Image (tube, rainbow, N blue to C red; front, side, top):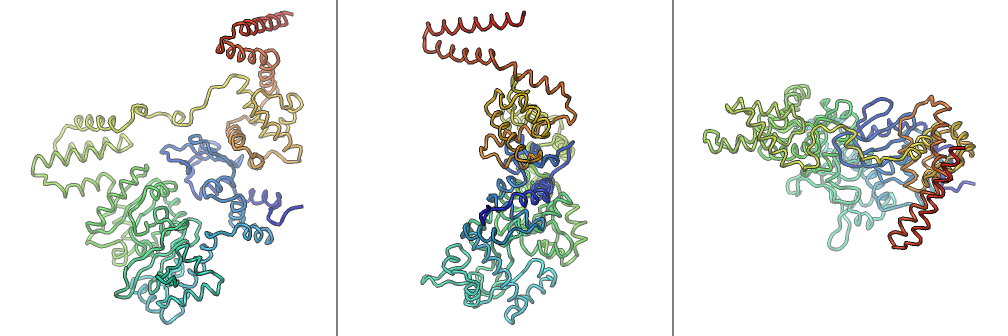
Length: 606
């Protein structure tokens, strides 16, 4: 009988079947079809060449770089930190499959946590603040502020913009009515507290921008004061386990699908830039949360797109911040462009003045490449009419060109620099090459290494070992082959981990299950065994294997058993005896080995 907090196996299988692993992984990784599988950049470790493979046929994933692998549930457990139940629940919600209420209730009661309480409180506060903005007298001033900034009603609803009443008691009373403990919310950072420990709403008197994680859950707020003297003008939620400014991007949950669709992200500086752009049809915009862009945020964007356009304010501070952001994007391997906004405007003001189409055509589409923008800005720091400063400028540009990964890009800018300043392009190329050699460790200096060399080095196995790996691959794929091997070999494989796998596999089929690799790996509790199953399952196999090929594999496996296995064991004992300087034992073992070899030769002649 199932316990209240258990999910029926049939329901788990239904959820698995209604959530194709390619679709789920595509929410996090930009995948491209290559042969029968899909390839992308691994979300579990940093890489510039795709080694992360997803197979639709087998409903599993495997990274040839870091070795991680699994099915649709383990993917979410690894990436999101979900428990198995949370992964199942997330996919059930995604596909419209209903879980038993008793099961969900029992789990939530058992696993209630501060984080879940905070998430619930943020959801209620989002609704509360939005209601105050839309339906109260005090909120009308805040709404007028937004309308005066060009935000329409549809956008207010889409982003669930709100207003925190200036009287904190209204917020506290609302939370109490929803059964939240104010002390717990103070501890988690949702509420502030006075010196006398009286809770208060940190955002009182501010227009609020809900900040959501990539799953669309509110995890914090950005507040903008609309009254003079209400300092600071901009205020974010305090950092917590849920709200980490360095890891979140404003509007990422809504922009993600459009980013993937156009293979480009636009990074803005502020919330209003993103909101105004979205209202005018630019749906792939995100923003960092009032702080400088971090490498984590840059890497997050890289999962979904190949190109990013940095569109910051046109003033000096904006230009300096844009260069820092561009450097980070370049570091993680993205193609970077930097937009220049004229008239000292910010993106919000420009779009309000000229419209979204013109912003796309004249700002986004005409944005400068990473190096071109750097060259433009760098010129302002030098007096190029002075020879010494000109040479310093040229050397600085060459250093930047040397950081580019693609040879064609380096050659393009080397030619441009040579043409502009009447220099020898060959000399510039030599200087670039020298700098690159200094920048690159000696072990990595072989150019244009093929992808397979960047993957985790696979050990070379003896023939019988490879035969066992091949057979298990076929057994995972075809129940009839597994049944045949069971009658011929049973669990008599030479490698211990292989014995464990086939023993589990026989039991899996005997329980009435069909060949289903994704389902089978869930039965593996040992992580080492599970990862080996995934590795073997990802190996390419022919769907039309002949009986003779199977017999050949069996022969190789059996030929390593019997006398060969005894000789292998004796050789190990011989090494031990020699290491211990036990001459008598070493001689005895050596004679045993000779005797067995004679018997083997004799049996081969008869």
